[in-house]
Image (cartoon, rainbow, N blue to C red; front, top):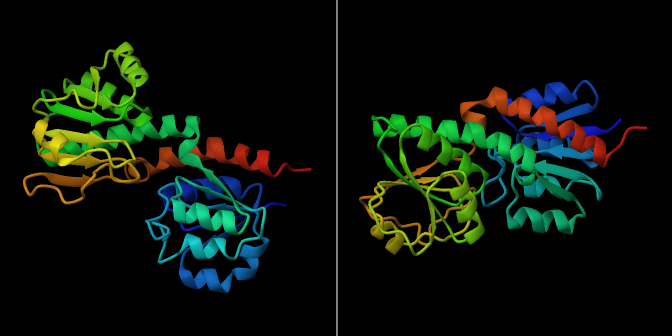
Length: 272
């Protein structure tokens, strides 16, 4: 029987764990003490599931108590598999060093599109609480034109917001326009957009871009900051919203995982 080891996790991982426990042997490690105490079980583990919310830049698992994924990988057997939302370069380097396979769930189209739904809804809910006003009539600039950006833009537009998508890719501009979402390329935006929502996990937004568009609220949805310089002007408010599906709709986000992860494990480690 395949041994599945959960490394930290929140409510959505608990829902997944309940489902997997019907088929697989389950081990849970929530903190650094567990990691040391259960080294033997880690060595025998075949599938390791870290939270979709991932780790910080130093490799500490977000939904855990000081549990380092980098350290955990060091105890894993060669050929084992780690499932995680997204992995930074430090995690990738460590996995490569120990012969551990990484599967970034955030790169799976099915899960990414499903998670875009609660991400969009959670972002809108947060904006309404923050602004203490309606979305109707708001001017919103969204950088990026991927799953989250498109899902969010469609909902904001339906609520009456004045939305503009900005991207580097001409094809993405065309796709957005085909969906009736106004879009343009970087370097072509000069207007008044008090709200800027970034979905691009690359440092691409500089002070000039913020100034040209009169941004007063910067919302970060990307796993890595889109800002070239993290020191924003004092008159710009910075709002980071990581892991929205797990915070705003953990039950539904957990159900999404149960629809995808069991089949993924079965494909990697087929049962006899």
